[in-house]
Image 1: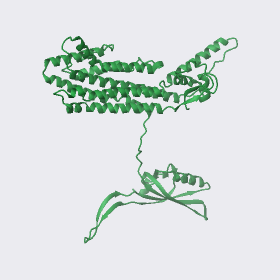
Image 2: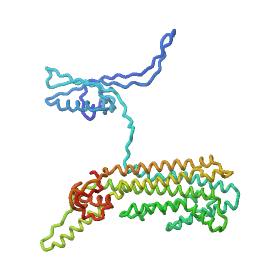
Image 3: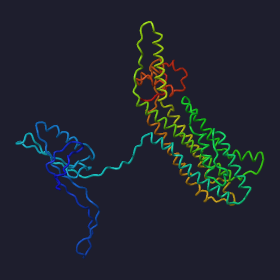
Amino acid sequence: MAWKDNLQDASFRNVALEVISCEETGGHDVAKHSYPYRPGIETEDLGLKERTFHLTCAFWGDDYETPLMDLTQALSMEGIGELKHPVWGSIWAQPTDWSPTFQAEDPDYVAIKITFLEASTPTPLFIRQSPTLIAEAAMLSDEPVLAAATDALAAEVEGISLSGVLERIQSARTLMTETLSGVQSMVAGAIRSVTDVIDMPRAFASDLIDGLSGVLSTGNRFNPKNLFGSWKGLLDNAKRMGRMPGNLFKNWQREKSGTAPQARDVRSVERFQRTVSAAILASSAGQIMVDEVRRGAAIRAKPSAPINRPEVPSGNVNSANSNASISASTATNTERELAPILTPKQVEQLVADVRTEINAAIALLRPQPDEINEPDFDAAKQLITYRPVIEALKSQALAIQEAGSAVIAIRPPLIERTVPFAGNWHLLAHEWYGDYTRASELARLNPQVTLPNNLQRGDVVNAYAR
């Protein structure tokens, strides 16, 4: 089958080309190595050269100037473009030279010769991810931490079992059981699947993770009207959960009831619980930022439209005012549900809280001064055991920081603006943005304003730049 049976419609950057001839050159890049007193040379193939395409295209007709100008504009654009070769099909190419030829005897015809160099699609240095994907990655970043922490706890409990000291095994069993009971007592409907925590440390870890997830997840306990206050309550719960094994040990020492577990065993359980608490707290922060990103996307996509006030016959003015008030209230409530809740400073504080808890967990995973002095302490073994946990926590801290930056970046810059006249948030929102429904946004950014309906000219308030 001849090439003429498979010709394709030629174009460059979607500008059609009427090709009357095409030439092509190619070859190999070759390094030549010659040596004295040796006939000939040695060659080193360095790969294929770029192909060079020489196309001759024609334009004719009374209005050939229009497609010729379109092609000239396409050739003048910077960078590579898609060339649809009549024989080879789609090729990424860089135009280098072109020369149109105008002849007096052909006033309605022009031929243009174009040279293209074959190119490859450039690899971008920075790949921009959407804020939603970044926030969702932070929300899911706890999974590697939980897996590594479970492996470390299983190794520690295995060491307790292999010690053969019955008192140590029993005291460790009591500590783990009471820790699990204390966590599950805070979760309604918690089910325990493990019977002996020493024999099945991974089942214990799974039950403890489920319990901590129930205590530290956002769930339905978060109040959208006081999201940051709810976050502070969640942070306090995470700190309390992480310190639970240590507090139990202190109670044993104070009450001197039964055999207290060894300090190293308490620290093993505390390391696991502190790590899990920090990881789940970070995941909950990621969920908050996912919601913030979605609210921001929804508010940008929502068209601003005036409230429709119903027409009613005269004499029923009270009914008209009532209906208009209901419509305005509904629009304001919808806007409040869509609008981002956290201010940039609160987002920064949320990220700082998470990173502080992660740093505290990492510090606890490293060998402690009192452990180093123990005669049978193996610092190298502990570093190897907890190194994967530390690396996973570091990655999670970075993911949360990137998510916080993404949440802040989707909003316009926060600046201080001077109130131009006496009024309220609704008048200012209409003056600055042409959208009075953004009054709730101004109120959220300015919690220090106690009289929002008595703003005075010259007052300085926080507001988005646009």
